[in-house]
Amino acid sequence: MKNNKEKSKSVVKNKRPKSASSNNVKTLFINGLKDIYWAEKYLVKSLPKFLKKISNEKLKETIEEHLTETEEHANRLEMVFDFCQIKTSSKKCEAMVGLVEEYKKATELFNRGPLLDAALIIGIQKIKHYEMAAYGALHVLSDVLGMEDCSALLKKTLDEEHEVGKKLNELAGEINQEAFNASSEEKAMKNDLQPTGAYMSI
Image 1 (cartoon, helix red, strand yellow):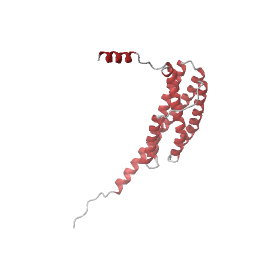
Image 2: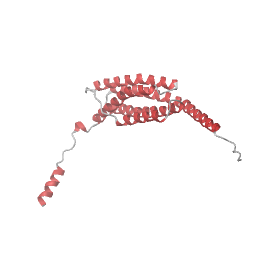
Image 3: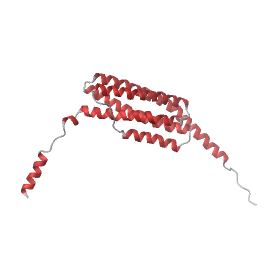
Image 4: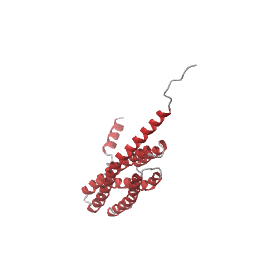
């Protein structure tokens, strides 16, 4: 019995630590690259499906412009992979899957019009905030690792994401007001259709 306990202690004591290659800042950086690369590719496939659902022309134009930028962001990430001297690859981004699914549900919940536009701009703003967080973190990590070329490319994408975020924030006020007005008008119409007088009993 004593020998078994000593053997167990020995196993715990001699347990191998994680290898340095899988437990360092560069690994964290590369995993982040794979994650956002998958997310950008997924957006390129997903965003066009929602464009026809949008009725606000400014919002549609903004998302169309961003779709072109998203393709460029994916290409830029491939350059970052090259600078890191590793094969371009991706890792499924569960967060982006969830955000796009939420976007999809909005199109099923609301009819095409101001209210759906308001729901969609909320969805795209959530996506933008995720991207800004991802690129911001990767930019900082590339600086820590002394990867100047990577840092410059990631900073350029981060700045572009911030610009789109500003446009969406400005547009959100207008679209949310349109949704409010449309909801108020619909409510008023329903009230007008309801009988207001009492029936005369015979």
